[in-house]
Image 1 (cartoon, rainbow, N blue to C red):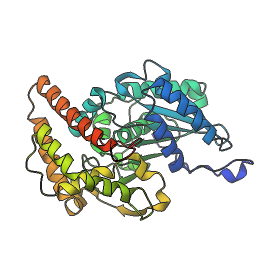
Image 2: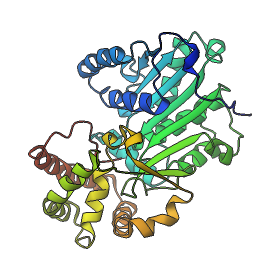
Image 3: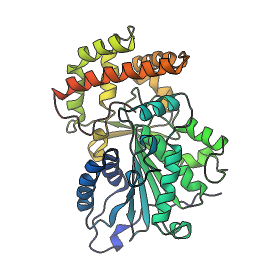
Image 4: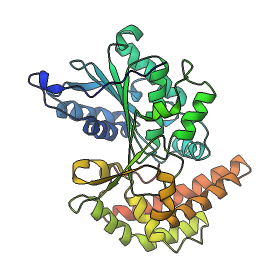
Length: 360
């Protein structure tokens, strides 16, 4: 099976259309996808997004909250359609603080398949149905995007769509935990709708990865392809977030020690918290304002850029793999949630953190 190679549509031939790039649409769509877990909030924000997309050719096609079978396990996604350029773009949100998302975080860290793979495949079914069936769907070019844990779903969606022999262009992801071992496992276990025989190296050419500087999330697994590191400019919100992270340093350190039992992370804790502060979706809102560097091998650079974060990750990983019972997993989750809730409450006193997601 060969992946059809397509370039982003040329909007210049469409009169009265304003151009929205794939990255910009991805950001708009991901911000909306994070709101699909609350129907009232989603409906309110969806109307604003459609207004924002006026004259661009793009509109909302459907969302995971529209169906019972696609809203399972905390799956959060929105699909957009451009009938003029014959494009579909599926955006997948990452973690919010609930047990389903936390479970998928653990599964991904251990290289297992996420629980949301089933609703993800059902969502692709619903998108195809909205297009008028598989034959009509072949007339469209598909793109996906995801932030954090949602980056895993974006890449899985890439391969799922490819398995149905539909034209696919790019999966654009932001601060991904690394999807390569997950994609490899899914292909090996033959979990996609049709068998995938395309080499993973070829699949990787359709993956566009934008990561913040090495942090606790984006060093979780190996990445599917080359990674672009996004560094803040002086005019972005990132510098403010770094100052915010520094302000909360002592508070966060105390809570991590209290709830997570991690006492050996005092050294370099500023690095760890600053890394987390760069993880939020808001930090990728306008890549034109940022410095970007292409990193050929993300994993080999981790020790250089984030050695303390790497040690912290290993500490957490050891706690997870040494867990013997489900009860212990629940205890870890409850402790982590308590830590995050107290931390979030403190954050609220320093400013608005809407659209800011601390976990993968």
